[in-house]
Amino acid sequence: MTPTNSNELFARVLRLGSILIAGVAVLGGAIGFFAASVAGLISALIGAAMALVFVSLTALSVWIGGKLPLGGFFGVVLGTWLVKLIGFFILVLVLKHASFIVGWVLFISIVGAVIGSLAVDAIVVLRSRIPTIQG
Amino acid sequence: MDVTTVAAAVSGSLGVVGYGLAAVGPGIGVGLVVSKTIESIARQPELAARLQVTMWLGIAFTEALALIGLATPFIFGA
Image 1 (cartoon, rainbow over the protein chains, first blue to last red):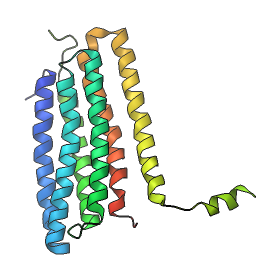
Image 2 (cartoon, each protein chain N blue to C red; image 1 turned 180 degrees about the horizontal axis):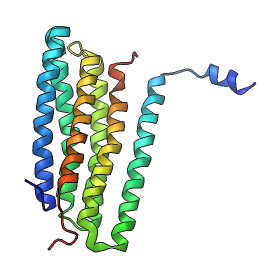
Image 3 (tube, each protein chain N blue to C red; image 1 turned 90 degrees about the vertical axis):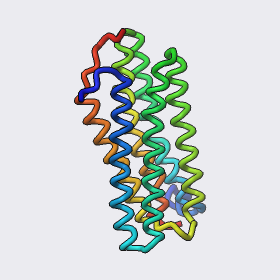
């Protein structure tokens, strides 16, 4: 189904992005488990969850902000971006020295999920047919 | 005292410098994307919905760099 307005587009992006990141979590979890036992599995799941929150918040902020006046739109989008980066930074500080984290598994899981979701975003936007003027 | 000597005398965590660099690039990138979107919407307000979607795609690609940059402490040492 081709999205024909921004509501459909963002709903589709969030749905497909979540499915893809769930796939990365399963694959990364399996690789992590065989490479580094339970710690590897937990690292892959945490990495995928971090990427899911990070990527989904951007789409959600644009979706929700789009219903506001222009000032509110940019406030919501950029405010979410700032809060998200600070939250991610704190999470990295907390998790970095945790005993149940295998760094390379978590890193690969995050990078795989982010790049995969970017591909999904780009494909959904390219396939969308949003009219120039929306009622 | 030449620049090399001064640079060699600097001490502290290189991770802080890395975080700074990870924040500067995407910060400039997102700023550019948003400023151009504001300009475009000011010129053609009827295109706002399409421009917002395009802006989101631009921000998503730019912030991926920030996310990967901030996750590097997991693979590089202290």
